Length: 208
Image (cartoon, rainbow, N blue to C red):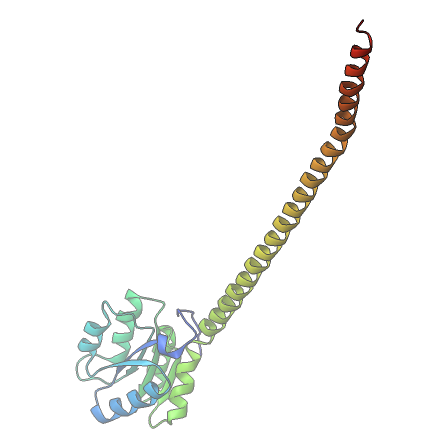
């Protein structure tokens, strides 16, 4: 079985938090070590009730549960957890596989049903299957954010260039206007100076 439902905030394994429900301490520690080496955060519960207590208020993304527990059946634990948070994924591990339990697991939306003994690789692959869509979406988000940053940088460069061009055109226009005004004033000043000079001479020539 391989039913994918997306829930995850990052493509990094370390961002995924796994609740491991296993009543055999040595097995639990071994599985914890395998998953921790892959970068996942793992918390162990040895009974169904302790699993439910640990689950409440914690951001678990995945539950890996044995079927036979000292107090509550593993499928009941998964059922309660998924009733509270349907987006949480689940994987069943069991040394007592049966058709009926496998069918019940499918109905609960369990992603994988691992029969003991299974290899470390089997467990890691099953857990990785829980997050492929989340990883893909996260990568798309990263690419979109990168493209957005590049676009913003390009827009800022374009605005800076446009501002520089606009300022240079304005400065050139101001220089031209100043030059034109000066060029226009030169003949006027020369004419005024000419009138003052010859006007005074003419006025003196009319004196008796």
